Amino acid sequence: MGSIATLEYSNHRELSARVRLLHWLFVLGAMLAAVAIALPSVLAQPTLYRAQAVVRFDAQRYPSLLADGQPTPALHQLEANLGGVLERTRYPSLRRYGLAYAYPQPGTIVLTAVASTPEQAIAIAHDAADGLARRIAAADGAQLLRALLGQELRQALLGRAPERTDQRLLRELLMTDAVAGVGAQAGQLTLDALSAEQRQALTRALEVLHGQIQYERQSAELRLQRGATPEEQAQARSVILGTANKLRAIEVLLQHLYTAYGTDATMREPDQAVVVTQDPQSAALIPTYRLPKLALAALIGAVGGLLTVAIDRQVGILPKLQELWTYRQLIRNMVTRDLKARYKNSLLGYLWSLLNPLLMMLIFWIVFSVLLNNPIPMYPVFLIVALLPWNFAVTAVSGGMRAIIDNANLIKKVYFPREILPITVVLSNLVNYIFALPVMFLVMAVVQWTQLGRLNFSWTFAFLPVIIIIQVIFLIGLVLLLATMAVFLRDTTHIVDILLQLWIFVTPVFFSLEQIVAPMLARLLRWVNPMASIIDFYRDILYGQPTNVIPTPGLPALDGVFRTLLTALVVLALGAYVFHRYSGRFGEEI
Image (cartoon, rainbow, N blue to C red; front, top):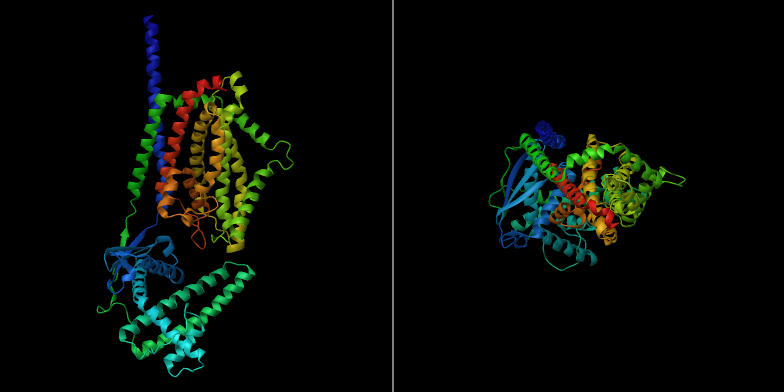
């Protein structure tokens, strides 16, 4: 008896040592997996430079720009207008890297420009400070310009010809409709009678107007280059012709002001009401922290691995995985059965995997792009890269939560791991999703070729399996939880069917969250709705940013990927724990 007990004890110790080794190997694998996920994003992180400039203005003179010492919407509108003009006319990279504003004290604005080279960062900061200073100084001049044009409009309606050069130039500007909201009005304003300060403000207003019209012209030229419809091309050509006349009239009037009155200010003279007090002399390198980020990824992987080990000791994940591996042939057969049943007695068979997403994409495209005039560029691509994973999620959740109930007879007759049933549903829908991917790439190729004249495929497509794995982890955990709930509370299936209809409206499938909600609310939705983040990841690597004129694929934000992966693992752990605890009672309940 003693020898038998000793042998059993020895076997137990050997088994425990083997399990501990597997646990440590799993933790190590989790760390390596986390680093592997983070590595492409970290290595692709560009080297960026930051340059700053400072603009100061008389806060009492411009009360509409400050309220209780804080910037008003009017000031933010000036900044947004400046950013759009700079991006379209001089610095296309500005949208990607950004231009930030800080307000350390009333009347002081610190501009921070970020670019890929120090020279460009300095140039952007310099031009942005100059442009913002001119826009602030133009606040008074815009009303003055309307008053002068209103007087000329009244004189023209009375049939009086211009008597002076400035009147003639104002009349030519009036005829181009460059300034909106001009109405006839009486008055005796003339450029000679204006004070030097008023002429400076008028000049700044004309300079800002010139930049805005240049922005309109380049936007119209870009629409022509993108291959718009004949109607849009005709409209764009009309805009280009009109802006040419406007720009010519403004330039002639500005030259007159510069020559006759010396209003060509540099915005750096200290006695002005608005002045650039600090120009960037150098640009600072923005640290990338590549090694700390990889170390943090390894730490997160280790924490996730240790948590999984802790759950395994309570639930027995490794033995369960070994058991599922033993039944891998059954899983394969059930997945094959589901796929065959999906297209049984169908003339087109597998082709429905290609036609279904294509037809759904066409419906959404007609509704949201053609009828509602959605401004998102290359909208069919924007749509289909999100629609396919969304359909995968909905069909997996809807079928997976019914997997136990629908197979009640099988559960009562034969023993096998009950987890196989909901997991099989997820895997069969995954295979169906993979079958539909050729349609996605075909749509992408056709749209890019017709609108850009070239293919815009990217190496970031290689990141697709990582996003699919995160989505599969999340869906398996969710269906395990819902399948358990459905056994004990049959109303779960009806409630979830209703919630699935709501789910699409808080997931950016046919829209971008930033289009309809504030940035903070969009971030909150991504935190509470993992599918919103997952859809955004698909768009990042396959489509790009919908705000760009030509969307270019890129890697998703590293913190977002880890946050969503951690959420998916938590959902999987919760679903596995609940399913494991209550699966023994399934036979009684169904």
